[in-house]
Amino acid sequence: MPDGKTHEVINAAVLMASIGGLYYFSAGYGNAVIATYLDTYTILTFAAAYIFATLFLSPDLDIDSKPYRRWRMLRVLWWPYKTIFKHRGLSHNPVIGPVSIVLNLALIVVPLLLLAGVSLQSLPSGSVIAAIAGIVLSIEVHIISDNVISRMKSAF
Image 1: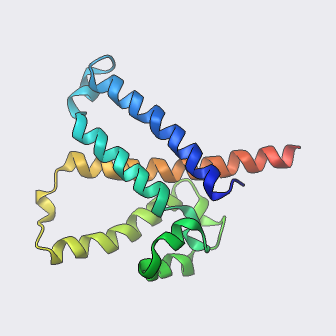
Image 2: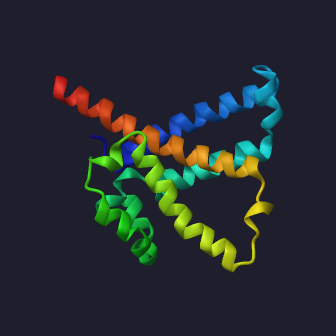
């Protein structure tokens, strides 16, 4: 399985391709329906969430990984995740892994937003969807690269 730096390089490459694809659609070259939902802010939200997820959210939050250490004092917020999931188990499942991380992050972010007086209904739904999509894609790329590289190593 790839090390942390390799994951970051793979994720960066996928992000560049994703931004290119999103820009292509937003410029009206692709599906017109998709283009109506894409604008510069949506693409930037997607990219920012993707970068955040690459650096701070990972199926490897269940071990002493770079993303886990980057949380510094706040890593205690991921203690339930680390306790529930065992490495390369359900945390690396393509469905359960991203859902569990997004739900855990929501349990952290939503109370903070409410304490700050932010109405959840006031959040632009397009931005929320773009952020979740960026997070999920980053996690999926991590899981897929783990599986592909592990299979390649076992084949040789």
